[in-house]
Image (cartoon, rainbow, N blue to C red; front, top):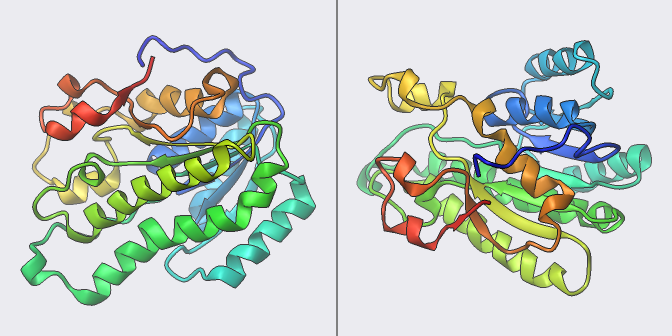
Amino acid sequence: MQDYQPRPDLLQDRVILITGAAEGMGRALALECARHGATVILSGFREKALESVYDAITEAGGPEPASLPLDLDKADEQLMLGIATTLGDEFGRLDGLVHTAQYIPFLSRIDDYDADQWSKVLRINLTGPFLLTQACLPLLRSAEAASVVFQADRVGRRALAYWGAFATAMSGIEALMQTLAEETEASSRIRVNSLDPGPLRTAQRRELYPAEDPNTVPKPEQLTDAFLYLLGPDSRGITGQAFSARPASADANRDAASEAETALP
């Protein structure tokens, strides 16, 4: 994967919706997509933070983005359908949909897991992405060759202790990805894949691992090329795959699930 070098115009004239675009991988990817020519639709639940990404893109001379404030915890089917209608009126299609929004409130034993938090984690990490993807399918079918990318996590490929609802949601994301890929492969030009970027230096990780030296974990912008590969034409024809952005040896915490992951070129 580290050998892949996206060309400057890789995403020229493409319309790409990114959830979780206010911070972490979502923010880094939004900036890179714009730098490679895409019109980015920035989605997140904090409007002020989205404005910061919007300004960074325009100041860098990228195509003018759009802002889509969205709280995945409160979104329902009607809201998602309304969003898709608005996007259709404005853009007519979607060339890419990337789900990077993730919510991990804490690590906990199943014995102690709060039921309300369990439901919230599943809504944000699984039900929300399902509803948004479902609503946007007509827009994705209207594109010449659309790509849906779900940000994955190793605990969704083999669950680990204390990851509770998040591991359950990420396992569901893998199943959703595979199911949608099977359903769209023969009937459309949509490709659907998941990508685990590995541990990232984000505010969320600092909360989960306060004693960890952040310098031992890569910044999100160091791993955006993997997403660009899946969004751009170089991955055309690839669908239904669970990718990892880095080799298993790069993560000391990798386990047997890495054997089932696909290494990007």
